[in-house]
Length: 402
Image 1 (cartoon, rainbow, N blue to C red):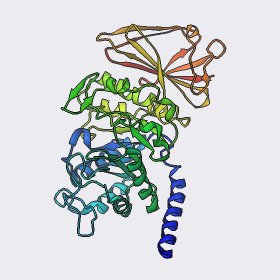
Image 2 (image 1 turned 135 degrees about the vertical axis):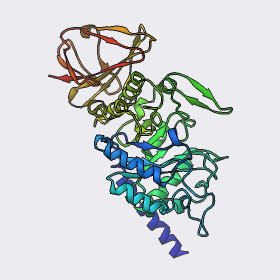
Image 3 (image 1 turned 180 degrees about the horizontal axis):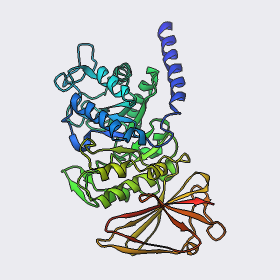
Image 4 (image 1 turned 90 degrees about the vertical axis):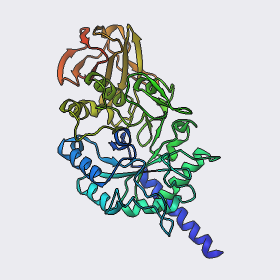
């Protein structure tokens, strides 16, 4: 009994130490790629290696995308004789450790998926009752990121279930970013900060501008449905703990304009930037959008402040985000089905954020205006801003304090 007590105290102490180490993870929103949006469960070793190669060859790793995450469908349908998970031997003939090694050899980080229930959403073995075994298995494989879903979780308490897996991850001694994916049903922004590094705020995204697609007991949500779904949760986001608007649909049958708007909004809202398209065959324009240095910098700003809707007039939504060194990011989105003219008189707008207590004070300060998608100078805030914005397109600017 005494030995058991000592062992328990040792595990608890290790958990505390590793928990402290994990506080240095995801200090800016994680960036990477996830297999689900495009491939569902139809994934295999060749595909994942090809994605890793493409992330490097197309400049996405250098743009900041580091996590390559396998979603549902990677594992065998049964555990082995020791209760451990292993990869489907047909899909992944060389095993998950070898795949992780390949991903790491490309300068990327290895992400994987499981579920808090008895089974995953696609019916593979879930982690319920196996949390510590699974966490150690992932650590042995060199996993750096765990997306943890919420299917088949009858009678489980979400906060408690995610806390159990958090402690299991801590006990391995390996720093692993923990992605809470219970779809916002139990307000994870209120309790997730001490448990995970990011939490989903909605059900699954789908590649449309502003639609809902029903699937019986649940729905998929378009870009603007997700953006408008939650109010007053931006105060819960910050370094190491992020509101996750789901994997992006940039490059998945949206127009180039909608791709830009989608990417701009995920960036200004400080959402994790997790690509969900087939980057091997993505158009040059899509890659250009996803790797835009100025837009990525807004998302990765070290203050970690989530942006917010400043105004909505004549079908133009204006969103703002305070940045480091007194700079500001502003997104003007054309929600109309035709091109519109933008006229924005800086002296008539009090740009500021009551939550972070940051204010531009444009009557006293002049800012240089940088067009981020077109990488050009638009003058300064001493004169009104005039621009044309196409259908569902965006003007995203950075105000650089002089």
